[in-house]
Length: 128
Image 1 (cartoon, rainbow, N blue to C red):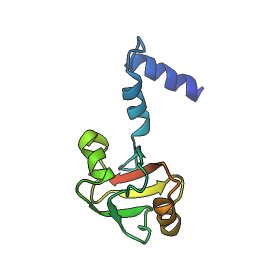
Image 2 (cartoon, one colour; image 1 turned 90 degrees about the vertical axis):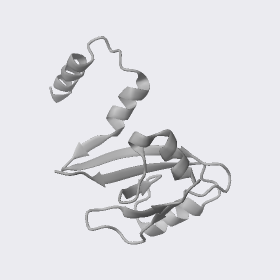
Image 3 (spheres, rainbow, N blue to C red; image 1 turned 60 degrees about the horizontal axis):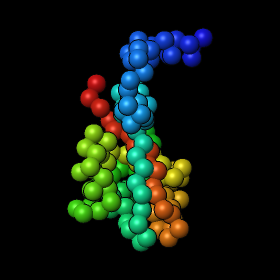
Image 4 (spheres, rainbow, N blue to C red; image 1 turned 90 degrees about the horizontal axis):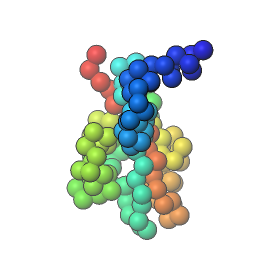
């Protein structure tokens, strides 16, 4: 029943099903819950390329690793310029990278040469 209600709401918002696939995916990937925005970005990685975000090594009390800086010219900086509405910025929290959530596992994922993309789940505190 809940699924039917969601489908009806979606049809009311876009009766012809005309939302472009990318826009629909962006809407689904970006959610607001409890005053926070949650979204996922996918960054393809060239061999040896580094993420370019400086992150805290301890978990925040509400979850996630705090983004302390973004290095100019890095993967993250280039992504931010291409996709400002989904940007990874100082003050955001990395909830996971490729499913890894704690600092040690994330560090290992970031340095593994066989990692070809980073799937990053993010959280940002929003003004209430």
